[in-house]
Amino acid sequence: MKNSMKRTIGMAMLMALTAGGLAACDKEEPADATDDTSTEQPADQTADDSAATADEEMDNAATAADEATDSAEEAATEAGETMDEAADDAATAAEEAGSEVGDAATEAGDAMGEAADDAMNQAEDAVNGAIDDAADSAKEAMDGTEADADASAEGEATTN
Image (tube, rainbow, N blue to C red; front, side, top):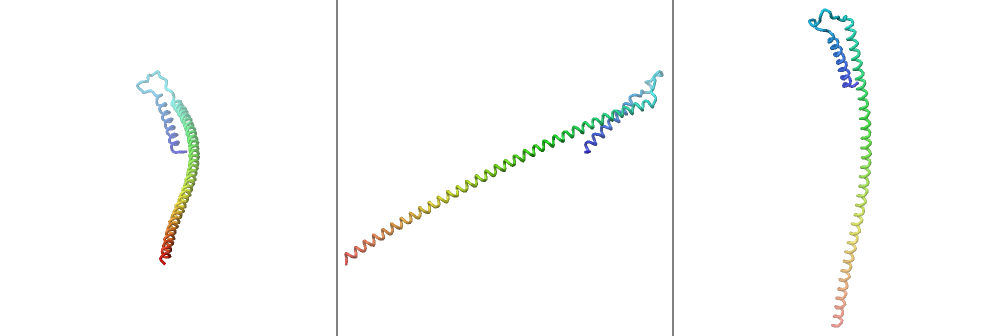
């Protein structure tokens, strides 16, 4: 038994014994209040009555203790069931949250992949544009050099 249950039963027994003792004391009258015609009960009968009262009070205390024990067991069972339900709910919520986190991570990974592909395409376009511009500039420079060479060759041919 738990300490609180032992304490409760002990207190119930103490109360029952105290009530039995008080009941036995209440039956006696003070000596100055008695008159000569009163009939006193024999001591054996008073002790028997006190014992019966004490037994009755102990039975009542035992019944109360049993009821308290039953109530405590029911409360403990209900608390256990409530805790089990709460644990199940928490586990379900954790699984759902984990699933949502996994989905978010997958979406983020996909977005990062798309961004990387876009960056790669832009870089390729920029490199190709730069190469085309350089090639055009080189071609223009060569055309200019060729024209200068042709003009220079014509000028020498006329001077000769």
